[in-house]
Image (cartoon, rainbow over the protein chains, first blue to last red):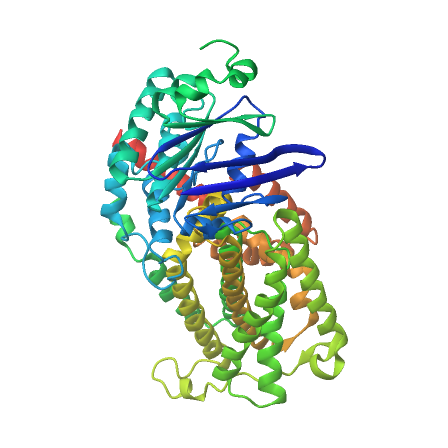
Length: 245
Length: 323
């Protein structure tokens, strides 16, 4: 599904991502883990075109997307969320999802028709599947942090992505919110038959749902494999898990 | 309260405005024409400022380009008004497309500075190109459009030529507002609001943010060009000041005073500023001082402008009634 070759990015002397190579198999859940500053978010931004790589190649479904603009990558079927929740804060919850549906439906350039009646049912259905139907008319900014994260997930799903990238989907959530979110993600991946790639620093989350794990440390990939392989990897135990597992 | 929403306020205001010549005062018609034209100019800026989140310090450039295009075509080349008017919009759009293509490459303050720089270039050309624009002296004695047909109409036929011109302005401004309203309520308008709220997210729902910002810039420039064309005819002359930075600041103040992001905010701001200007300058020469004070108070007390404050007030009333 996604194939990353020797990708590298340096910010004024600091190498954030140092020649990372890994693949994301189709229709599975892959996690990228690593301590803060390991380069997880930079890696995501390289994959979605927000940052231009110094070298290396990113291939999505056999198409080279290195250096492609984010909106083009999105239109090819990649959805994403950001570590710092990115939503349209002053629009309503409904309008947030509806905007993404309009863009996905190719109607964004229509300047002479009315927007408010477009995709009503689709937007409400999507919000209901995330448990946000009751808040559809609320301004997005007024939602709780956890609900805002779910809304961002809804905005990403509205583009009907084949590959979904989530940057710390449970960051800042309570234990029960985290559990709900994990269950929700598993259901979405199964229902929509999509491929999920996410970053996380909560180990319990990662080992409970990921089928494949890639471990980043100081910009380098130090391990890649099934949860069991990663858990038993000597290097991973030394630098990251610290013998906890 | 829903009954209040159902009243076609905009239509009522335009009908009321059309009755202004009934007062029989040249001055009232003059003021009303001024307000109508600048209201459209401010509304065009609001498409950038309030809806797309782009701060332009050089919106007067397109106002000036529209004004010169229409005036030069009508006076120098004897082109009929409808054609000259359309050409003014097209010329303003063309310049907005070229300048905007550079501006949208930068963001925030750099965008604002670039718009200002391009506007000053336009001003300098208008100021220096004597053979075409009349240079410093301006381009005067621009003819009124031929409105003889209005004189043969019943009821309004006996009105003055300035009243007839005012009716023409009002009609075109009403069409302009209707078109802008349609644009901001369209899917395209919704995308602009999404870009204002969060360009990064907008990019990742599949929107080419720069392209949409440029499109908004061109649309705003076109309407500013039309407003400028009417303003030149209204003044019977076009001057380099039309494109000067102070004109850009004036329209920015109108938009913020009235409430950016609210559709009717700029129109309210234009009316308020023009009426205040005429009232206060008859009492004191310290008009800029008073204006500055009003703006400071407003920005602190009502950051949403006059319409924003009104909107918040109505909502509080509504909540009070529901409770």
